[in-house]
Image (cartoon, rainbow, N blue to C red; front, side, top):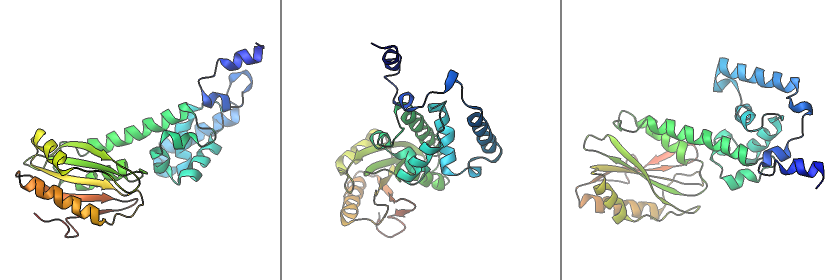
Length: 253
């Protein structure tokens, strides 16, 4: 084996390293260090509003690819997925289709996505739903609005309407998710919940309920009522807005 081939094999587990043009002496060029320093300072002084989406991505990519100009990759990601949120929400397979994305980049993006979900969730758990309704909607949009398949979640509340559990009940396809009223009610009883809020997303972006959505909601509401449980609402999450069954007169109990 040649010396070059042997040294290359040392990095065989890192797609990102293999795509990086080697920098002489292993040091980051001064122009790149200056750019990164200026960008970090601008972010620290002005926060997220001081940088556009692709520069916010750059700040994340700095850690994944320490000695490469990551601006082109940040722009490719935005061009491919549309905005910062959709980049974070993209699946591992989708991300790896973008030239320059390997395991290190995927890990950094998914860590940031997980942190965003946990932060949003922490603002609603063990809180009274009415007083934290805006935070609840923010959480639902953060976790569900940019998914490319349907997801059905249930928010379980106690007798004081405090959120005690948030669980994913089912995953589906682009336009369908299987939901079984019996399983929904069974889980509510296991958690000793008094009421629940149903939530699912529409990957199309349009939160208008289908006939199947309306029928399924009625079935769950009826099954819950027979056991003394209340379905407070069913929220359908679109790309930039949501629809409330309760507000639109589609739910009554």
